[in-house]
Length: 280
Image (cartoon, rainbow, N blue to C red; front, side):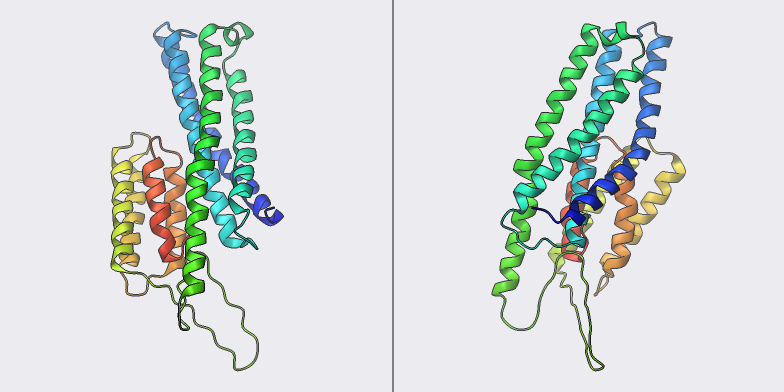
């Protein structure tokens, strides 16, 4: 069973960040509705199709957000055992995503307006698509993303346990507690060329996504590209500052989570950040 602090942190963080996602979704759905009204296609099949595509994409954004926040929570409050971590995370993920889906369901039904619209065959088909996407995401993250995350953590733990000598390579949030007037501690994060190259490739994916996105204002795009360039500079250092990277990656992922088709870039960045001591 997960430490209650892990579930509380993830739940509170997702709830807080979803407020901005709700606002952005409201704008996008409003644009779809206004466009349908202008063309005389309000409550028609094209409008329902557009709504369906948008709400399914939104559910995928929420799934990525939950996955990211669960990883942050694990990095902050380390689980006592890896034996049941996959099962526990899968359960927590399912609960959080279904809660988000329930809130989206309520919002969508209210957004559609009249009861007549909500009884339309197109609307019912749209909601069936939404429910199917929810089922698919719960299964996918349990059997792929969460499984891969826990297996990677297990392998890292085995490597540390079997490594000879005093040197330890740590992937994740790091802390040290010192006692005594002569106590000292040193934590070293080892980053190889392959780790740097993987991060550079992930940052390049983020750059392309941000450059190609039509959802970002010009100034916001410029700022995110500047964050990426700064991340590259820090990552190239002999001893990368994980605290600086954590802050920049947090800003970057906040933006990525609002963009359609951000999954590959998010996944690549999340995996590439771990050797730098950053869980996102």
